[in-house]
Image (tube, rainbow, N blue to C red; front, side, top):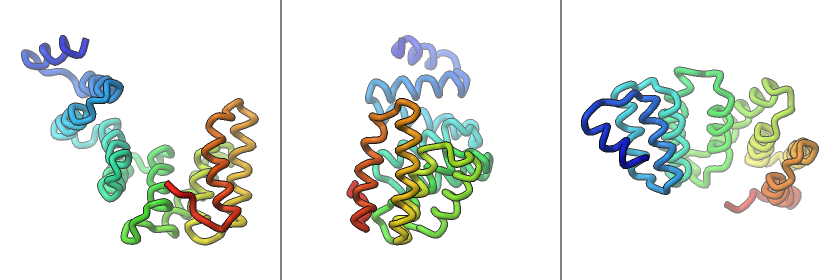
Length: 181
């Protein structure tokens, strides 16, 4: 199917939405460079196409290009400032970056508190990010309480597998330590 779409693109332009579907397909196939090239093409045509902006931010984060990822999230959040998932990802990066120039625990904490409030303390990912921000500020007791609540929420919704990662971070916070990546 991908080959047919690539051939079709050579003869006729496709919509940004269709090209974005192709990006997701390339990612599933492990062809990250092709995915990134198509994201760039989308953003050249339409710099405010949010799915491409946020996907490029996520790709940068997965590749360890944290500064570029943060920049992309900020670009997207100027267009959609209430996008909770993007805000959460940005806050996570600001709390957990190993680069002193990038890490910003104060800003991360501010964003994470806002997200937790917006989600009525019912989103485990938001609570996880708040825990990371608290730990980054050295507030480990509060980080432990927050992460315990996140784990409880996950377990109550049948997501025990996901809680294993949270549990590792919880153990680090209990030792007054940041989790190892």
